[in-house]
Length: 117
Figure 1 (tube, rainbow, N blue to C red):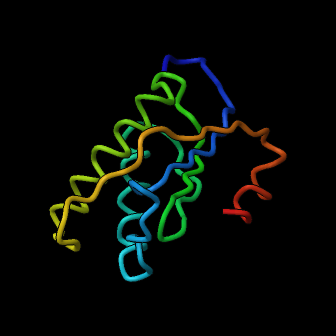
Figure 2: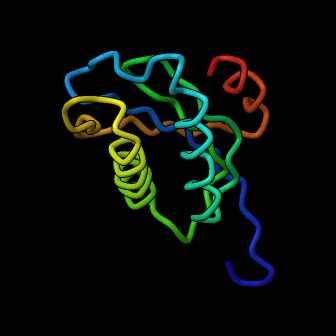
């Protein structure tokens, strides 16, 4: 971002494992969620929380407006799929379902969204 630019854009991203399979079992979640948080940070977003269930994930970020939401989701899915597949946790190929949800929140809602996730 350029000097003198200030933004407060909070986005919750949600997307699912392909076919909503419950593959992200507790044993893998901490490592996957931590990795995805680092991806968001590498894109210069503020990673607030990453959490989810075995069949889907929630990512709450302070958005860097220089990187589009669609590019962010693309990179999160691409990099995390490679990471998970390199771990060889599954017989087949892990992948995310197409599509995603993206929801914006005001600063006053951060705590509620964080607690929800």
